[in-house]
Amino acid sequence: MAQLLEGLVISHLGQGIAVEYDDKIILCQTLRKLDTVAVGDKVLWSLSSPEQGRIEEILPRRSVLARPSRNSKPRPVAVNLDTIFVVFAVEPHCDFLLIDQYLVICENNNIDAALVLNKTDLPQTDIIEKELQDYINLGYPLFRVSARTATGLEELKATLKDQVSMFAGQSGVGKSSLTNAIIPDKDLKTNTVSATTKHGRHTTTAATLYHLPESGDLIDSPGVAIFGLVDLTEQQLAYGYREFQPLMDHCRFHNCRHLLDQGCAVRLAAENGEISMTRYQRFLKLREKMPTSFA
Image (cartoon, rainbow, N blue to C red):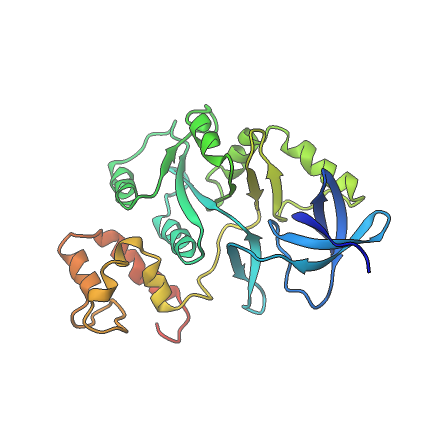
């Protein structure tokens, strides 16, 4: 039997998967019986020819970030993430509903979340500052940066050390600019993966794992802006709002929907100003976006 070696999946290249092993990159295929292999996976693989390998087993994952695929079945985008950094900016419009959606997904997937306000060189409104204070009060770290002027980048880089991270955010907020500032030789590394595996330059929509200069890994997934709520239950959606968690056990009914239910501790806390009313209202909006089985 061929020797099994442990490797790290760093990119998808067409039908092949780039696996890093002992500072080398091997183009591998997967056994059909395996689940979808994702960037960040640790795998056991064997040599199938002098320059190619076969993934035999996916090792246990500590976290999975998925999005719906064509058949609505969740498909892993990246795994073994420690922190998702949700990037947003004054321009384009600051989409707090999308920010909440990312945070809900992190809360339910054993992934830490942090916020990155980019383009701090642009003027900011009091409304945005008030919303940001709600997140700070909930314990979410906030980094104020400008990829254009390099403001705040050193603090952000220091946080990325010794963990696996990913930037997420709507188009136009500057994720690529931030990634390029943090990984100055990103294009060179990308071309090296393609050349080593004898595969053409891989598309920008493919997730790729990069080792950071001072330790830590960053998974760059430029083609993925939104991760769906398709596989969450309404209870998980409510749990994803961190401030709801200590209140949910105090609702009169164990299956409380946190709408107009009698004795809802969450709604009462929002009405009394104990938790953010704007966050509660966004929860109701996200609830409407959930599957129609309980909307």
